[in-house]
Image 1 (cartoon, rainbow, N blue to C red):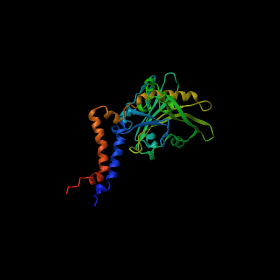
Image 2 (cartoon, helix red, strand yellow):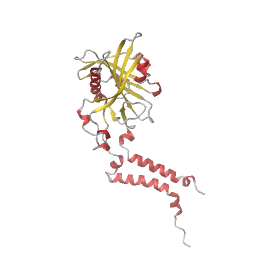
Image 3 (cartoon, helix red, strand yellow):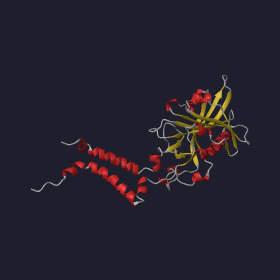
Length: 292
């Protein structure tokens, strides 16, 4: 009678072999660094414009968030009281500041917010209408990153030689744009804003956390908002290097192991063991019969 191990040896061996292959064709950061973090304009779905990054700060740590630079270039800041805003957004960690520039008469509002529960988090497309605003326009904007080193290399080593549409960083990040308007009861416009935001996204299989970065600025009550849009894009581009750096280039674990004799032995044994388990029943039946 077959033992349990013999009966399911093919399944066990195939599973182990799959794990070995997945591990070999991963990078050390993917295995030991908790996966790849991306930034993107949409929370609930992936887009082709998402960018893999490494974070320079812990967005879930209030002390790290409060240590975000209060001066960025010629921009100086003052903190807002976030008590009410944190509750309305369903936030666990929040930083809200007004950054002003000596050449501009109105500041921009900068927000970092994190929630540990996606279901309780209120994104801007929900939050602004709840505050009495109407969404006048919605779209995607490319923000230029104020750091030439970001554009000096591919985002990942597997994208070497590809064009921009295939993943080469071209110096810009795609973010979500909203133009929102608030009106009085008699129909007069009382506020109009340009809002840019994006999400810092971890794997939904390992984390239910939502982190959003938002920049907003007042816009003229009517007519073109291009001036306010350019200001928000310029400021948001200046904040990126304070928070992120491009995902470091790393070879697959397989290539790292093949660079040494010991590593080659590890690769061979790692592949051989699952194969021996898969074919254990056949190997057992091939034992030499005694000579009569």
